[in-house]
Image (cartoon, rainbow, N blue to C red; front, side, top):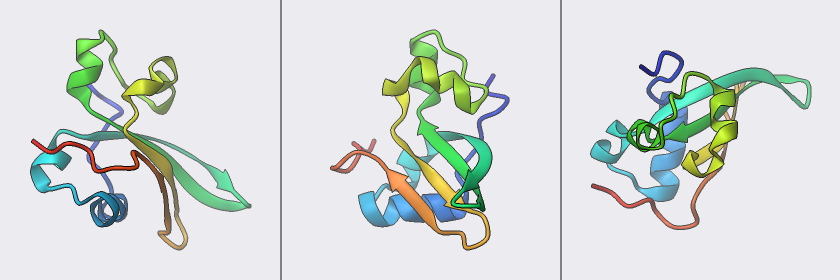
Length: 100
């Protein structure tokens, strides 16, 4: 159903956990789609994190990064990970996301 989406990379999960304090149950509801590119000449992976259940409720099947262009409100966190340093740049809500 979400062929291109997958679980979060450990570095991305750690960045979210340290900034927003999400627990494992909250992470279980999240998936990520990615797109490889370059940032300042270095290889990076851009990511968008969303809740698949919310996408389904809106009738959207998220299979790749561009699918969320149609529904930016579904993106909870986004950013990029520098592949050579594993540095994560993260944008997300100013306050912690509600946890189940």
